[in-house]
Image 1 (tube, rainbow, N blue to C red):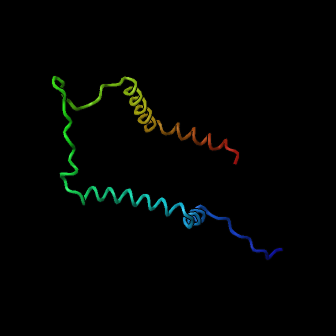
Image 2: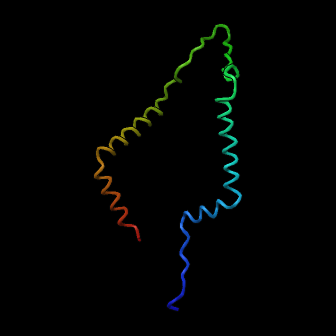
Length: 109
């Protein structure tokens, strides 16, 4: 039993290469090629007149204005809170590392 040959475990790349021999990845590649070649065709092979946006008619008396949508206070507060948390994590990185090390040391492996 000492000379028994043990088969190695399959790694993630082996599993992916085995999966690529099946039918799903070539189908996904075909769908991707169809989509991206359509984008290339639209960018380089169509006349520019065909790609122009049609003007939108404006009703009489209405003001045609572009620009930003109205401000949303909840959205602004959320974005500012996220920005503050991001900046605070850059400034106070050492406590975050300490918390992460404690969390990792409590794992059972």
